[in-house]
Image 1 (cartoon, rainbow, N blue to C red):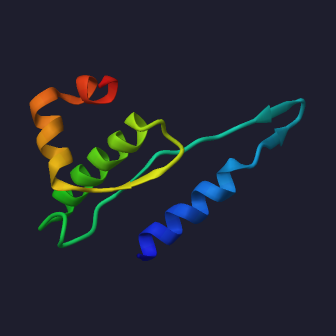
Image 2 (cartoon, rainbow, N blue to C red; image 1 turned 90 degrees about the horizontal axis):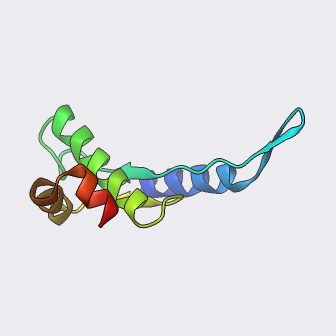
Length: 87
């Protein structure tokens, strides 16, 4: 729950446009969340699963967070990263 609250706060703060001299910058972020030990028994696995969740957030349009679900890992393994992102 703490990770989702943090992700929501980060997304909210980045939704505001930023002024940089004569430029107005709009920033988006896609966040993947995986939790130890539920989503992996070691750091490498948790990071890989968070990355897969982030790819899923991007696939759904970006500017959001996604919690890892084991089905995501199966889908990426079957399709490969590029196909997963493009649908």
